[in-house]
Structure formats: C-alpha cells, structure tokens
Length: 474
Image (cartoon, rainbow, N blue to C red; front, side):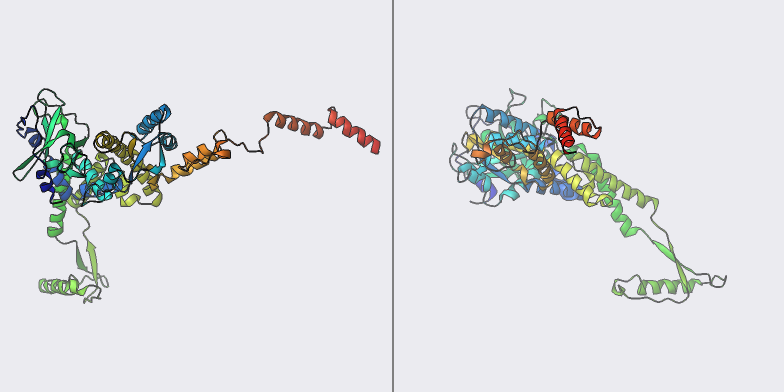
C-alpha cells in the first residue's frame, strides 16, 4: 500500500475547514509543547526506556476483541457499571466480571465484520500486539497518542486501516472561537505538512492543567517526563559522571609488602617500578584471564574502596530510578534487585496491573468505542480488552471461585456466568442448598436433650418412655 507518507497523499484532496479555508497554524502549540525532547528521552535514558518499554509490552500483551452487546435496560446499566469499575483501581474484580457478563456475552466474539477485521489487523505492517505496543508507548512517553483512520480514496468511506501518528510531529488546528475546539490536525515533518480531517484522527491524551489561551497547550497531553524533567537531567549527569569515573577513576587498591618476622621489607623505587610493570603484565591484563599469577615476596592488598563521590553517584542513580517509577505508576520493586523475592515481585506485578495497566486499558477502550463504532462498527458492537487474560488476576479468580461455592442463593447458571461459562438452563437455572444443612431450632433442641440425659433428667416425654422400658426390663 506504499509508504506511510504516501498513504496520506493518495487521498483525494485535503480536508477543508470554514467553507473551504484551511486556517493557518503558526506552530505555536507544537513549539510550546516540545514533544520531541520527551520522545528523545526514551532513547537517551536507560530508566525511561526500561519503564516505558515494560509498560507498553505489558499493555500490548492483553488481547482485544469485538463483542455484541446484550439488549435491554439491565444490559445498559451493567455496561456503565462495568466501565466505571475498570476505569480506576480494579479492587472489585468479581463484581466487574458479573456486570460484564450482564452487558455482553464474552464467549461469543464477533468475527468477520469490518470492525473485528480492523482490530485484528490494524494495518499491513503491524500485528495487533505491535500496534498496541506502539500506541501505549507514545501514550506513556508523550502523554498522548494520535490515531489516523485511513479511508483509502473515499473521503466518506469506512476506515480500511489504522496508523499511529508520531506525537512529536502531530499538531492540532484549534478553533479560534472555542477554547477547547479542534478544527483538524497537522502532520509536520522534514518540511512536509499534511492536513488531516478531525473525524479521521483520534487523540487520546492525559489531562493537562497548563491552560493557555494563546498556545492552547491545555489541548495537548501532559508527558510524565515533563513533570520529572529535572529528574531526567539529574539522571543524565549521574550517568555521565559514572562513565567518567570508570574511565578516569584511578587505582582501586594497592599492594604493600607483608610484614615478615616483625620486619617490613624495604622496596626501592626501582623495585617498585619493576613490580608495577609485573602487575600490569601478569595481572591487569585481559589476556591473562583465568590464569594464576606469581609474585616474589609476600604482599598484602589494600582496598581503597569506593570514594564518597562514587557512593553519591550510585545513590543518585537509585534515587532517579525510584522517582521515575513513581511518575509512571510503576512499583519500584520490579526494578530493585534487593526486593526480587518471588512473593514481592508477584505482588508488585498485581499492583501494577490493577492500579496502572487496567485503568489505562479502560480509558483507551472508551476512546476506541467512541471513535471507531461510528466510522467502522455497528451500533450493537463493543470493543473491549479481555481482563481475564491477565495472569496477575488469577488469585482474584480463585477467590471468586471460593466465594461462589458457598453462594447458595445463586443458581448454578449464575455461577457459570460469573466464571465465563455458558449457561446450560434446565436444572442449572435453579439454586441448590446443601442437604446437610439443619435448622438452627432443631440444633438447639438436640443440644438440650443431650444435656438432659447427661444430668439424669428424664422429664421429657422421650426420656419417660426410655425410663419405663428400663423399669420393665429390670
């Protein structure tokens, strides 16, 4: 289908605004936003790269499907509750699954529709997971993601592919009469400017409190790197200092003559120079790796240890990593070698999924449904991620199972639905109570009878009968 830029020029003409006049964009928003330096940080800072690539890959590992919504008011209200539960921290996993099952049948995935095909194969050069990794990468890195829907050569046709626009080269065309209005978008790179229709672009962004009437900066996403820019600069300097220390750090220790018989061997300057040369040739030599070296005269090694400046660099780099983790909502345990026990790591992964990953997925789901359904899908279709595919939530599923076992007020079909199984009907549509259950009144009567027998009280009718029988036998 040609190169990325060629696909824009293959469209029949450019979109027009305000009765055929394309407003002139001075580029003030792009210049003020300066997204380029934030995207550069991804390739220039090891901590930023490690965190964003981890988050992007984790988000991309969750599969996305198209479902068919159930009919009725109950399904609509359940959908609203389910969406709300997955927008924040997913602490009530069981309730979210129940509402999702009432909203749509997740066992019946819609296939072979324009929307389902587009979601499975967004474009010709990216699979679904690569597409979402790219999309989430820009969102975490620059605070916003732009998606362009290519309609081919038909201006009013359905989207035939989805392409991710680089946020550092994408600008908005603001409406001069509306502080939050957008007339269209521009892609500007290497002197080439392409105007894009508003309906063809989805902007998914974070909230930006930097309100500015002139630049409209509040209409752009806020990059987490901007909030931690001083931390970024500090980390860069710490890495440079560490590299300089490695290259010019001087000696790490020294050999001193060992005391023999209360006598310290005297070493002349010439002997010391010869000894230094011997150490360089026999010990400090990559070609001698793994060999055993021998030196005359007993020696002791004096370790200078790390200097104060080296310790400060190490502490600075640790502090910088912790700051980055806080900014991106990443548990620092995931990057801390001191806390890498299996239990701590698994708990940290679960916190990451419930507090960062799932809310981000929920935001994107709502944006995709708002934008793609009118352009590609049918009215009863719904795009959603499969939250049950997250291995970190298996403990929640196990907890749900144990709760359902004792939930005797639910029918077997309701329990099957909660576990993402198909309802079977018939006897499964009934609620069953354990036959071993006994009314509490009967338990009280039995306890009283046992106490009476133990105390020799035969005042009850049953006791009198037993007493008469005993008397007759005697």
